[in-house]
Length: 99
Image (cartoon, rainbow, N blue to C red; front, side, top):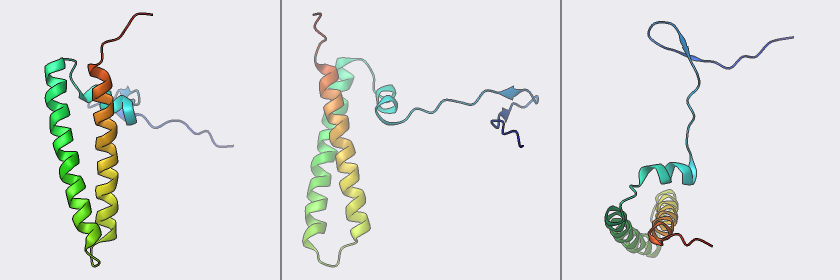
């Protein structure tokens, strides 16, 4: 019977460190954005511009028959991620109402 232990990273002095928690998805996105409404609005504007630019690039690639399908797929994924981030930030700008 083998005993499987989690692998711990060693600090410079040889003392084991606990595994670091990785944030993914919406939690990671939430940690990236500031709480200041003006900063959120600026970031929201940047994301909307990038989303619009991606939409134009995707439309151009879709017309071209010899375009790279992998690149087109990656651009579409990026566009969807931007859409999710835009929705998240727009919701963050709406003040919480106490029920």
